[in-house]
Image (cartoon, rainbow, N blue to C red):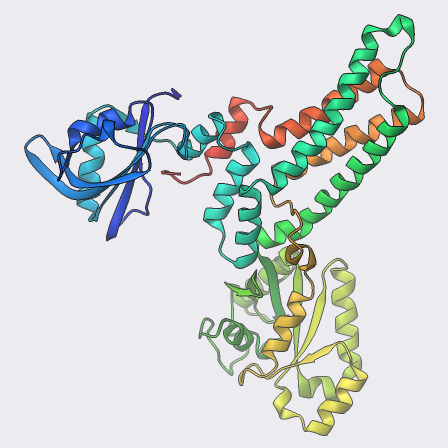
Length: 462
């Protein structure tokens, strides 16, 4: 695509609203706007200072389309690094469309998805990981994902990668220099110092890779499956967690025939709760299909809430133990939380005695909302939010994870080569590969296909 023409797009969501913003970027963005904008004070936009706002009308010949505010940003001091004009008009879809059509007829073209941010990257306003963080910021729907996106957009992750790359590049340069003096058998790079650096880089890379587990959870939310026999209160629990009547509740067993999902935020972390069909032997074909989907959802969930009636646990504790062990054996990598519902049907003495014998059981009364806060705290306990609170760098992007993994492999190859006493030319090959993977993260090394894939996921207007 051409990267020096003027592009335009709606920067606010489509539909009616109080105001809408149309964004124009390009070398001639301001000069294109001049004949289409009549300032109430007869100002010429091409002679106005950057970062100023002007009141006037957008006109199509002798026809006035709307009274607007026009913001002017002179490059390179703008989001894209180019001249940028932002038009704040009234939020009528008709007005938005008419202004858009007017500019398209007068030298602009429609921006592609993410093209404003792509230009910001290509013009050096941000690196590639920061550009990707823009999309994450727009998509953030809880405190944790917002915090990580803000940190990455400000360059927290980029700075760490750039520092590692620069230190490795310095040693790579010395080793490459040695190759020019191979016949003289000299060493410019201190091998012991290089070993220490490689060890430090490996530690940082492993820490970043380990952070992806929590980063992925924060970015995409944690799927939690609510499972158990029919009529134990799974749908009631979902409604209590969401604080709304999301699922149909009935005394008739087998009411839930399909899975019901909804999301809430607990302690800044997104959780996606899945109410599943009750597990039992049944001849009902539709109910059996729902039960099969229950097992499929358990496979995809990261946490399983196994519901039992408190009175049933009291009457048959051995059965609970058998069922719990079977679940843990079938899903060994998933935490299983045993939840005793309808605990209000037990006397205080019965509840205390049962709690002393079954320390893993969490007692709730979903219908009354009792014990729900304790359940939420238990769920939060499965996530290591310590890194988040310490403002540590957390990897959330699978592309970054893949590049870091490959960089780690190359660093370990260099370490092995050092221990085996390999020559500098062989070490240099692996060092170059490690530098290549670092560069892929920040965008110092890119391809058109890579950029196309990344920015295709952006919204139009950003």
